[in-house]
Structures are given as C-alpha cells and as structure tokens.
Length: 438
Image (cartoon, rainbow, N blue to C red; front, side):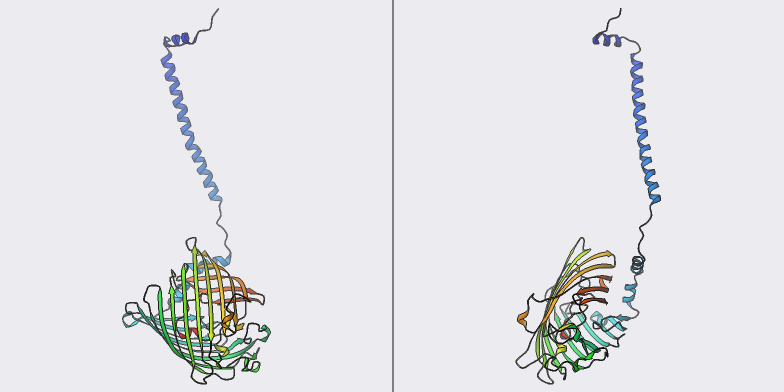
C-alpha cells in the first residue's frame, strides 16, 4: 500500500530525479514557442484589419455634388473673376456701378496706375445700361504724397437717369403712388486728405454740382411733376446748382478694407450746399457711417454691422429739393423694399449680416435691415422703423466682393438684387459722396 508523499519529500525526490533538467528545458521551450505563436498572430490580425479597410475603401464613392455647385467650383478654379478684373493694357470692362433700378450697365474703363514716378493714378469710364441710363466719369488720385501722409483726389461725373422712382416725401407714402422723374447732373470735386496717424484720416473737400430734373421717361408710371406740387416736393418745378464744400474724418482699423473680416471703419462728414442760382435751396448735411466686423472660426465666419444716418438742416425760409433729400429702399439699405421707396429730409438705417464661407471664393449671408426717413432731426430714434430680412450669396475675387445676390423680404413683398459691389462698400470721401442717389 502506497501513502501520499509530503510536499518536502516530493521536492527532495524531484531534485534527485536525473531527468528533471530535460523536463525544465522542454517546458521553457514550449513557453517560447507559445509566445512566438502569439506574436505571429498579431501581424496576422493587423493584416486582416488593413485588408478590411482596403475592401471598404474600394467600395467608397465620392460625394455627389449638384450641377450648380459643380459650375461654381469650376468658375472659382478657373479664376474667371480675377482675369476679368485685370484687364489688358489698361483697358477693362466696367460692370455695374449704376444707380439701383437702372438696369444692367456695362462699358469700357481705362486706368493707369503708378504714373509720375508712382505718385499718380488715373481712370476714365463710360457706361450705358439696358434701361438707357448712362454715366461717364474720370478721376485722378495721388494717394502717396508726403511719404503717404497726404492724398489728393479729383473726380468729374456726368449722369443721365431717365426714370427714378418717386413715391412722395415722408415716411408714410403709399406704395401705389409710384411716379418717376428724370435726373441729370454733372459734378466736379476735389479732395485733400491728411493721415496724421496710421488709422486716422482728416480731410477737406470742395466741388460744384449742376442739376436738372425733368419729366420721367417710363410710360408705365405718371411723371412726378404731374402728381406732386412744389409745396409737396420742393424743387420739382425749378432746379438750381450748388457750390459745396465740406470736412470729414475717418477712423479705419479694418484688416482688409477691400474685403474686411475684422475691425471697424467710422466715417463722419459735414457738408455745406450753397445754392448760387436761386438762393432758396441752401442747406447743410451731416453724414455718419459706422461699420464693425467681427470675425471668428479663423475668420471663416463674420458678423458685419452698420449704422448710417443723414441729418439735414436749413436756415429759415430755405428748403431742400426733394431729389437732394436722402432715399431709402433698394439694394444697399432696406433690401426688402422697392428702390427709393422712402424719401425725406433725414434718414437712418441699421444693417446686420452673418456671413460664412461656403468654399473659397463664395460666401453665404443672412441679413436684417431696419431704417426710416423723418422730417426733423429730433426724430432720430428707434421708433417706427421699417424692416426687412433675407439671404444672399457673395462671389469674391481678390479678397473683395465681385458679385452679390440678395433676396430681401418685407411686409410689402420681396425683392431680388444682383449687384457688383459689397453692400457695406467703403464710403467715398468728398462732397460727391452726398450727391443724390449715390
């Protein structure tokens, strides 16, 4: 009969067993083989994963894009806007820049930069629109005098607008009272600007304006002079000419004035209009234009804000011709209303846009507008504002808006705008910045 061996006895027996060394080495070799097998399986699993990924990639298909998006991408990739703007030997086509509702305008433009040892730039253009509006202008500017501290501009403009819409003066005119009138004017202006600091510009401007108002040429609507009396619309029966001069100041810290995504631009100008023909239509005007841009997400998103006001003043027994009063309604202020829908001695407008980059060269936008016209400066407040909302697209070239499409909605309906400028375009300096219907 055999009895169990104690643990100590078993260890002594194992130690004196002659085959124990071979058994240990055999066990170690087995463990090494197991480990090697486990390591060999790991690459196999990695290979399987990689194979599965390759099979999935082979089955993937590119995202389908719409025909419209494909055309927009081709338009961007071929740099058509950049080629168009560059021109050939100083000549290039000029598109747009006609008054709102003037129709599609095109014409030749000649420009030369860097003349007089790089100090002078010149430009001249002539345009005609599909509605037979025309405009001719010429300009000379010297932006880098006195090592960039001084700038001088001279501008001459002739415009012929045969059918400007007019609903009467005041904030409550019904839209059914639409009439039209002819506006023809010529102006010559010069501006001298001083830049004492990087972001600050101070200047003086002087010029002369010849005006002519006549019967509207659009037979679909009554001519304004057959509906409104001189008491209702001053200057509708007789026109005058103006000697005008003014002063302005600008504080501009935008990151890129041509297509800002960050910073602000604040402009204020005071202008005296001297009626030197009839003597009863002299007035003074304060123009304020405040713009702010807030960029985020690496400036692919931008909130653009603007507040603009035109405030007029006259001496006793003086009047402001209706065509020299500010208008609201159209592609640049209240975009849900017809062009020139509201007209009075004073105006204010507020605009807000949220812009986002759809892809390089194309931005989307949603916007809200509010504003009003009013007869007295004391009515400058946020009561009784007209409003509109909408959305749009911005096609960009050379970091600026080349084409803009906006759709605006208001309680009077909706409007679609196709323009060749930014809605918050940099305000022009000089007395011609206050010219009617700019």
